[in-house]
Image (cartoon, rainbow, N blue to C red; front, side):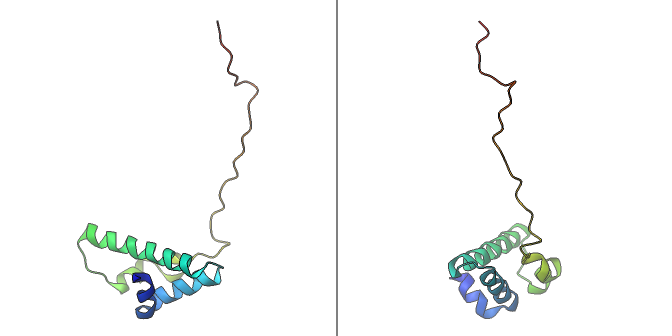
Length: 93
């Protein structure tokens, strides 16, 4: 609910939500991603005992930082289950 309300009050949050929607995310997933960002901000505010400052957030996280394009995202390494011929489970007795 907070992330839905935030899209109406903050320009960068609305832009973040719109970018997630344009990536093909559902409304629920886009709101969940925004809620996770808001949660990170809230924990940082509690940790540092500082009030929220939108200017401070945007200075530390320019718009290109909090909405990476698909090309900029790191690709997950491909993992395989290659079995080495050396590793066996034989008893030595």
